[in-house]
Image (tube, rainbow, N blue to C red; front, side, top):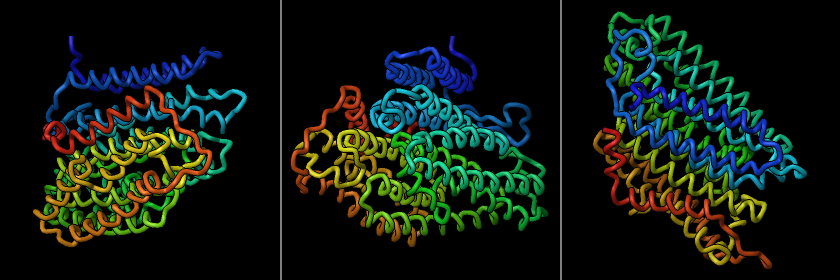
Amino acid sequence: MVPTHPILLEILVLALGFGLLVLETFWDRADRRVLGWIAVTGIGAIFLASWAWGPGAAPGPDVHGWGAFYTTDFLALFFKRFALLTTLVVLVLAIEFLPAMGRVLEPARPQAGFGEFISLPVILCAGLMWMASSADFIMVFVSLELVTICFYILVSFLRRSGASLEAGTKYLILGALSTGFLVYGITWIYGVTGQTTLAGIGQAAANPNLSQPHLLFGILLVGIALGFKVAAVPFQFWVPDVYQGAPTPVTALLSVGSKGLGFLVLIRVLEAFRPNPGLYAKLLAGIAVLAGATLLYGNLAALPQNNLKRLLGYSSIAHAGYLLIGVTCAAGAAIGFYLAAYLFMTLLAFLVLIIVANATGSDEISAFNGLAARSPFLALAMLISMVALAGLPFTAGFIGKFLIFAAAIEGGHWVLVALGALGVACGFYYYLKVVRAMYWNPAAPGTAAIAVSSSARITLGLLIAAILVFGVWPTPILSLLQ
């Protein structure tokens, strides 16, 4: 018998996360990588179970009780699956990262703490899934805090590493600051509208007698908090240091999972004000300015980078700019496809980075010198990731950018199209620096070949296939968004 309510998915994810913590307690000296594969299997099973449900109706302004807080529309289900798939691949990254983690934390006990490191992304996944279904600011706040608290721990997990502790401190301080903006903004919006549900706020916003300056101030505060989550300029200053200092699987989860669900919340908040056309137009104009600034800063700041994690951090800011163009054009399907493509491209890059860093002890671009000779398969995987992120045709990255630009052209946002084209040109330069290192720069003398585990090889192959298949056949993803 199929369960009747999809909130069971989040309950199962939470049960899996807490179950892993209990297992860690009694695991003694056994190989803790088994815990990782239990987590991978559990998340994979829940991902498959998510297809037992179809989208439900979005909650209306007069809905009361649980239905006013929790929605199961097509966007909610799509992003629940997005969170599950992201977590699934990040868990594989965590298993590959275990040797590096052991060298930093406790060389005498190289697997110490791995159970907690595996269980936290699973618990965090439940928060991301609740964010996907949030139809009320209270629900948004609670789910966002669950995600943020898990990230506070994960970013600084390598406590013997100064870079990780610095990244954790910066993320903690700025995350707490963004939470303050969010709560204060919600308070202002509630004070003006008397509502916390997004549908109720939309109904109240349509009232012409509403105090628009006070409402705009509340929206501005909420926008600052969400700008921090999606790394939009000028709220992006935490990204490079946190991305570089955090454990690489955590960086991948920050880059993909947190950003994706942050954009969904942003879309839902903006849609709540659509019943007031004048206010809605002002909000979209503000988003357009943020999109242009984010595109310019992210792409130009990425040009001189020599550390691959920092480069991917600035690249993440640039991709936030492209996504903000989609938000400006209210192109929900284009945003959803772009995020799906970004998931495959970015996680592929981070998995190759973990494998190479394990072998070389460095995440500088120079560590990839001569990779084509040391490991042709890894070099091919990184090549596909880089050209897809740059937007080369016949990759999912190209289709994502095409859909965003098409929406911008249709909406007459020619300045954003021009800035986006400039960003693409910059992207080809800094992404192809990695390709040049792999195929043109010679490896250091005495550099050994790099071994790739079977699980990593399978994951790499699946991510490569997704990038190439959806680059010529985007229909399966787009059909989930309509």
